[in-house]
Image (tube, rainbow, N blue to C red; front, top):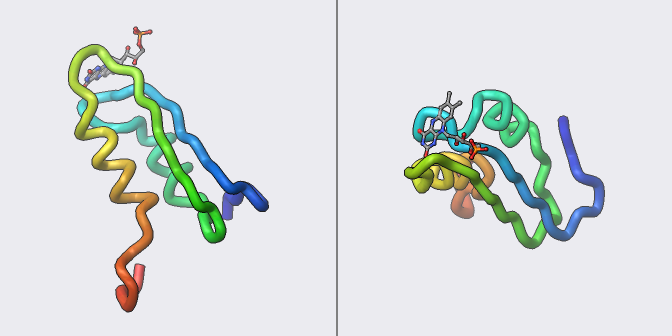
Length: 70
Ligand SMILES: Cc1cc2nc3c(=O)[nH]c(=O)nc-3n(C[C@H](O)[C@H](O)[C@H](O)COP(=O)(O)O)c2cc1C
């Protein structure tokens, strides 16, 4: 599993492709182990509309609510 050992902050920076994040970035984000990471941020570059890409990324990296199995 991809893991930034001991990282307090993790940033993902990528372009918006087809109102989302590139497949390569989806696969990378799914493999991140963010246990112990206090702050995660993202920056997307785009041609005009990019908020859906940030929502998509948030859905991947956001921890599930307590009690919910990821
Ligand atoms: C295949 C492809 C799909 C794209 N889809 C979107 C999109 O849905 N929304 C958007 O705002 N920009 C889109 N873009 C623009 C890229 O986000 C933009 O080219 C990238 O952020 C780099 O910026 P630059 O071209 O100014 O260097 C797309 C670009 C490509 C090549």
